[in-house]
Image 1 (tube, rainbow, N blue to C red):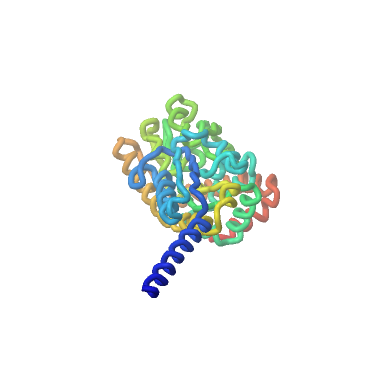
Image 2 (tube, rainbow, N blue to C red; image 1 turned 90 degrees about the vertical axis):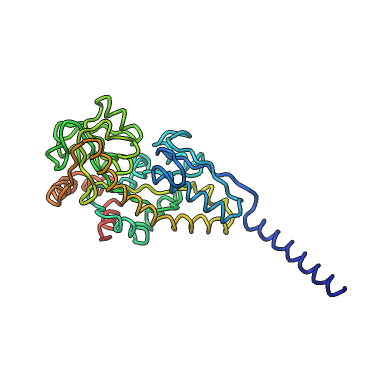
Length: 340
C-alpha cells in the first residue's frame, strides 16, 4: 500500500509539474489577427495566399495547444491593403500576408522586392532567404518592427484591353498598373502611362477605363476575375519580368511578446509553408491560362527576346534609380544580382 501510495504521489507530482511547465511554455491564450487583401476561402479551396494563412493558423494553434489562436480577415475587411505595413510596424496590426513593395513609400528598400527583371524564377527568389540580400532585408525589417515569417514569391502576367502587351513597345500610350515605384519607372521608360492601384482595386479600374492594362500575379489575375475586364493575357509561366515578394509578416511587437517556445513554433510553421507557397504559385501560372482561354481571351507567352528588351529598359530606368536614390542602393542591388 505504501509503495502504491508513493507511485500515485509521484504520478500526481509529475502531472502537476507537466501542467505548470506547459503553462510556463505557452503562457495564457492569445488571439492574433491576420489581415490580407485577397479573397477569402477555406483551408482547402480558394486563393492560395488565404489558404496559406489558414494553414499557418491551424498548425500553430495545434502545436501550441491552443495558447495561440487566430482571427483571419481577408479581402481587406480589417483595413485597406497599403496601410497594413505601417500598422504592422507600429503594432496596430498583428500579422499580414503583404506585397512588400506596397511599403516602398515609407521603406524604399522594399522596392527591390518588385524590381523588374531581377528575379527570374521561384527558386532564385527563395534563395534570397539564406543569401546576404535576404539576411539584410530581414535585418532592415526587424529594425522597423516587422518580422518575416514565410517567404513567398509570385510571378506575374499582364491583362490588357485593346491589344496584348508582350514587348515594351506594346505599352506605348497605354495606362498601365505596375505595382511598385520601380516597375512604374520601367513602364514610363517604355512609353506607357502609369496608374497605380492595389491589386484588389484593379478590376474596377479596368472596368471603368482608368487602366488599359495591369501587371499582377497569376493568382490575383484569377482571384480578382480579371478575365471579365480584359481581352488579352500575357502569361508569366515561361518568362516574366514581374516577380513579387509577398511574405507572411508579423509585427515584431507581437512576436517579441510570445514565449520562446511559441516563437520557435511560429517560425518553424512559417518556414514549412514555403514549399506550399511556391508550388501553389507555379500551379496558378498555368491555371490562369486555362481561366483566360476558357473565357475566350487571346493568351500569349513572353519569349526570351521580349524579356531581354524589358530588361534593357529596366536597367536604364528602374535599376539606375534604385541604386542612386536609395540609401546603400548600389550595395543592395549587387547583393540581389549575386543570387543566380
